[in-house]
Length: 162
Image 1: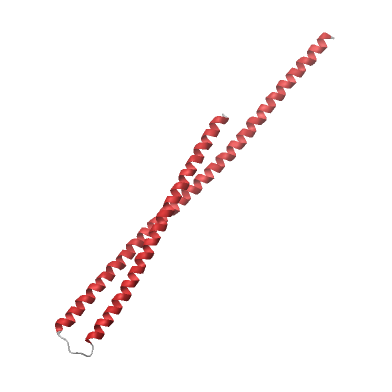
Image 2: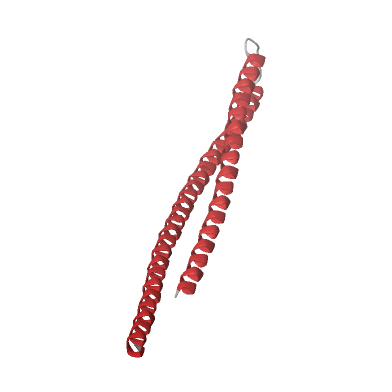
């Protein structure tokens, strides 16, 4: 019976190792996604600052000057393209943040699975220890009983010989 417990305990330890490896993988995915979010946010902030600077520069270029409507329209088109690029980057930030949230949920789930695996392994190890103690106690009781039977038989044989 004890061999079966040992085998089951090895299986539970193996499952715990798998859960720990899965947790590490999810942590790496989360960390990678967090880096991507920071990078895209930085890119969006740079784009925003560039757009503001470019709008201001172009406005300063034409301010207090007589310019054609075509020049103003060119400036507006350029600013519109910059705003469109900025909007796309802002949408990418939102998309990457959603991915980060999913990665966080997967990480939390992996943590829960790993913790449950550790608890299960510990509980089973305690159970095995209790079972082994019971088996050892029963073995000792049987051995004592055998010794008593032998002692009783020896005592009876001595009485018969005397």
